[in-house]
Length: 193
Image (cartoon, rainbow, N blue to C red; front, top):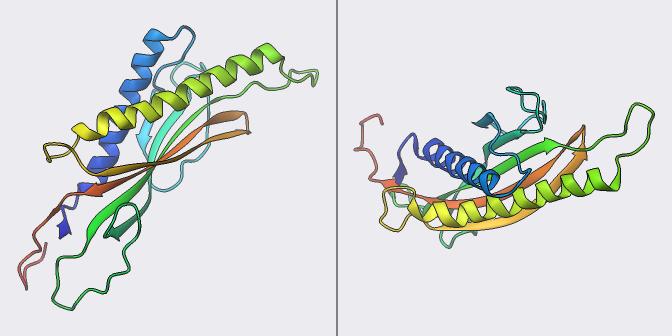
């Protein structure tokens, strides 16, 4: 089935909104936990680690991004289909999109004298990253069933999560999720979509 032109972008925006809302809720319930960064956007390709400080306030709010890793046909989510399609067959397997959610925060750095961050500073940064990791995972499991036109939401597989950095003064979380996209009928022959 053919996809709506906005299908991929709409699902990426929905995931971004879902994770951002969950980060805000967690910040309200966990003392010292930063909320959703003001720099939160869907990006084309892998995010640039431009700045882990919040450009709105200069605080450690960070950067939240969602990007597409790949779009592919799948007969059985999350595996990629290798089924051969006929010339006139407009009914490929389900189309899936693999999204990458990346949240970066500032990492503790050495001071001006070259002394490394204290264990307390490291532990505080680790707590923020660990809470962010759980919040992102929970957000996906809680929100994805409610997005899209289907009554029960799309089929999806939450993939692996990894901690990023510290690198360039940033530390964070990368979470992958694969979502089955709703198709629609193919355009009529000779009609441009």
